[in-house]
Length: 364
Length: 128
Image (cartoon, rainbow over all chains, first blue to last red; front, side):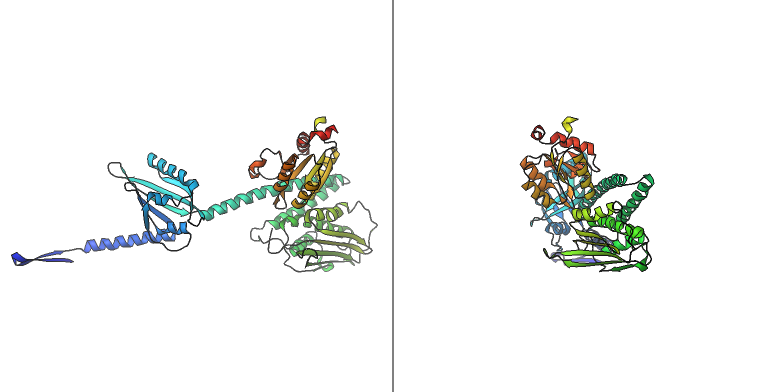
């Protein structure tokens, strides 16, 4: 109830007015609650709101806009300024297009929708996506424009990254096609007949397919470890474990560009070991040791791999037989990975050592 | 086809993938060219360009193990040595200053590469 009393002197009585304001109070509370809800929703949704009085040119905006512009994360309150003040926050390169888009929306009576950049006083640039609508009075005259903006900087950065990734994928795929073609040519030149070519080429394709599988596991972007690579290659050719001894740290990560070439080299060593060496003879043994040590010249870490077969009854050597595998180890690894390598046929088995610059922590 | 033979041309090959570099080397040699390189790394390519004053043309892989070949391309351009790119990238990924450079998309067509190199290689060589 609202009680209004007034004493009126010369009349010697009091005027009393009693008014039931239950409804008014109720609606005030409701309005406050609704405002609070809107404010919270805008804050939680990180929406920066603006309300532009087109007649006076004054713009009210919510604290979120100041927060985005200032980039300080502080909870600034609502602010108002002339239209020009709001425009000052917009990146000079985008100002003209923002004004043009506003004009277009105004003239065509359409919603304003645009993505533009803002620049903070400190110079940091953010992307905002804005939507707004013009309102008119009964006479059709423009009165105000209401709108909301959301910070899309991170989304745009992700989109950029995605573009780079797609480009990278295209580059790698086309490169791989080139490698497959050259490999086919090369294998064809050194094949005895078509069945021989077929078997060898399929074999190489399988190595490449395995490598792609290792390289593009969505949940393991840290990179392929040497440990993983050698186990994958040995298990692919059924290198039986009792004749194989693997010793080395399990956390040596390989650069993704090194994985393919190294896999091909390991595969050549392994298939030759099955055909002529330690993996094909029950009395023989294959030991692979690896370690990481700083290089003598640069001090940067190098991965040293030592592949040693022993107890092998060596078959009479046919130099053409190991041609492609040797070329990979003696030519391709040094050329492509900056590796130093050696390959020797010992009296009781192959000995191969490969040293290459190592990388840790998943650098690709 | 004589205008496109690479006889006595000194061609620099920059390609980081051994198998592709090897293929280029063989194919270019088969067509009469003298191959300089092949070279896999940008730094070494820059050194060779610096020291080698007799290059008639170059074939450059755009991406050398994650490094872009552009500094070498700029150096060649300054020295007036023509070059072509081999690349798996889209045309839009090449900086505008190289938009006139012939791009041979991977996997490269050797006939196209030879044709392009033969056309751009410095002509005085073939008159020697």
